[in-house]
Image (cartoon, rainbow, N blue to C red; front, side, top):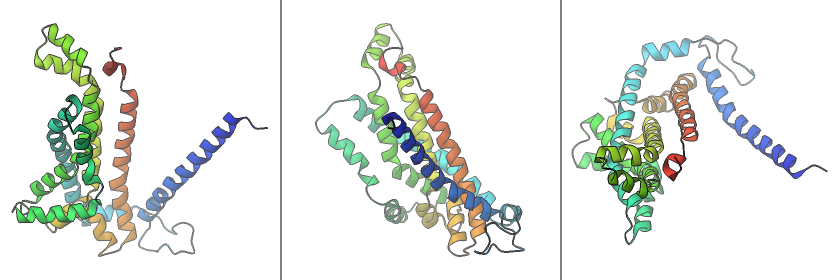
Length: 276
């Protein structure tokens, strides 16, 4: 008879294998498509591309808007992450530090925009940008839109972080004569640091991957990596070029998520529990 703990391990191993395979197959296919040489196409009767080269990578770098798209995306995303965090701070502080009637309802309302499909929200928000007359300023309009659209993520994460701040730590620092800046450093920052980092990275990734607003407001003057990717899948339908852009878009985000996971695991919970 197989021991229950051994069955649990077998089931967990099987689940991890299925998940790894499910994630690995699209990634491997994207890598293979990005290496297809235009001299000989990859037909369904062949398991691997007959000829592989870096031609598609060189072509996209030299003969497309990839350089401009990368510059735009990696300027927009960190700016949106920082602005979103700053806008979310007051609401998160109020929800995390104060008790008032309707607090739980307010938390729920702050998350309601996530219920609406992102593409639908983006289309209607783009209409608002045109109506108030700022859509002509492409970068600033998209930056403002991203900061507003991703506020629910930032508010939720930062609210939890503010809830972890110990009031007795704040009182002790105040009683010892600490200034406001010193109280923030010793009482708030240890609990807020993981949440702030998570907020910045999650909003950064959301902004990098956002397509609808960047396309509706930015086209044709402001190009991002997602809008360039969708043009290859839609108007041109070039699988190899799209695979190059998909890898450029996905790989850095995967690395950032791994960094975030490692950072959150290494965060010391004792700093916010009073045991530090």
